[in-house]
Image (cartoon, rainbow, N blue to C red; front, side):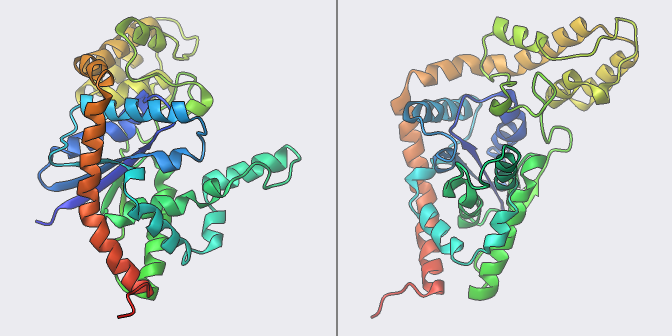
Length: 335
């Protein structure tokens, strides 16, 4: 059976939170141990430049994210774990793809459209404070994916458009230059495609509603207690499908645990008890990796060695494949 190739990236713009964990990190860690999967996981520091112009924060985020993946058990013997900026073939492919990508496709990117609309609503020029990085980053993302013949890319539901764009870009290139790129598929966990934050909106640093992944036990419990709930009293039936707290619980629960909690909601469980059960469930899953994470943070040289080794593995594939792309578009030796 042919191996699936799974790829995902995490932008180095902040501290990992629960949304990152359930939406991308956890399924990727699991896949890294699967003998039938070839995994590529990377720290997307070029993507991070779109939003993060703080060099110290960029470096710290890179350290924290790398330590997170390693602490959670990423199999770096089987998976390829690298920093995006250590693979020069990625920006070169980005430019090559840019030259065959329709501008209209970029105009439809959700992030770009939202930024333009925000400017219009504020009475500003539509392009006010917008960068070419924001406009063109879907092409960089496509290069990340297509360079390694990725067949499956775990994403949240809000990121499915990125995969659709990568497919469009690949199809257009293949039509013009020959069948060189594999068309990737999005893999969405239907239970927790987008994890809500403490206020019920998508968990995001932009909304300041995240629960950091590596909070100490007491601080984690405090953060869970801050999750917004309604005013229904103990004994009153509660709707789990309209509960931010339940959605977060479900992201860590087994099917049996979900069913039991849904029944508890129907039976009128008190919000305080539901929050305590949610805390205990999450802490039980994360506690064993917490100490490993702290140890790794104290050894950045060890993490750097792992990332550079991953880049060497990535380039062992990327360099000869990009040579084929160059030849296909006419960038060739004259003799």
